[in-house]
Image (cartoon, rainbow, N blue to C red; front, side, top):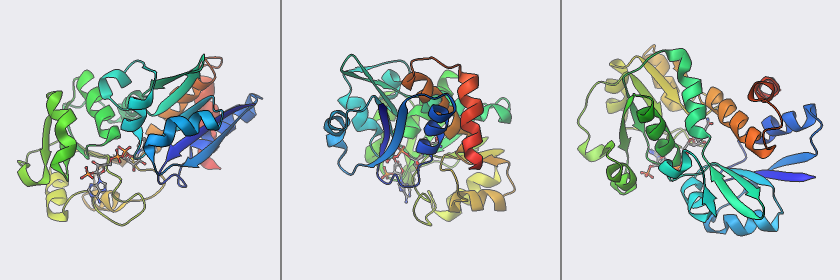
Length: 263
Ligand code: NDP
């Protein structure tokens, strides 16, 4: 049996086991997907091999560490510097990033956009900034602390901390922070967030399965919005395709995986 897991801290909220196991079960693939609570990201590689895994997903806060621990990084992940999917290939750890393309597919229902504000500067923010720019949508990054902005500055993204942010108008406001994941915090000071939302057209919170404090503010501003469920599905479809070496089509995986959301 092939074994897969998701590494994260926290990880108990993750729907990934349900999603991937639903595909394995439906297509009688001899595989099982679990959760692994990992506090020390530096141990990820050792734990991967100790558990004899065939592949894994990586979530908050280990995506950047995972990138550094891979033997080889392919596709978008090379530009992003963060990995959310690991596949064992001939004993080597290969890293991919399916968050970026998963997010763009999820965004399609909003139609064409010209700019976006990304709140947060972690691994997910890197993926979204890279893929938005590739798709002609200008991203600006706004983070609580300055020290996470080095990657964005080095890659010529507009990036600010709370202390030096010049207020402007953005069509799309995206929360990529973990504020609201396990607490009741807003990702930005409330007055700044309400000004941004009052001038925006759409909002996305990448957190899924709950109405976060950020989404409550979005609802008050009466903006059309999405939580992270569509992105979760699409990144999962792409990851599963890699796990099973392309033996099922993306459409077949999506159809089965999406049903797991109603379980
Ligand atoms: P990281 O740990 O890499 O980054 C977290 C970011 O959140 C940092 O910029 C940090 O700012 C900021 N932050 C954390 N707490 C607060 C707070 N209270 N107020 C303001 N900013 C805060 O996380 P990831 O990028 O890996 O993941 C972020 C979120 O995205 C998670 O909630 C994760 O579950 C979700 N996610 C959802 C996906 C989906 O498919 N729907 C896919 C990927 C991620 P600072 O630098 O100042 O500490």
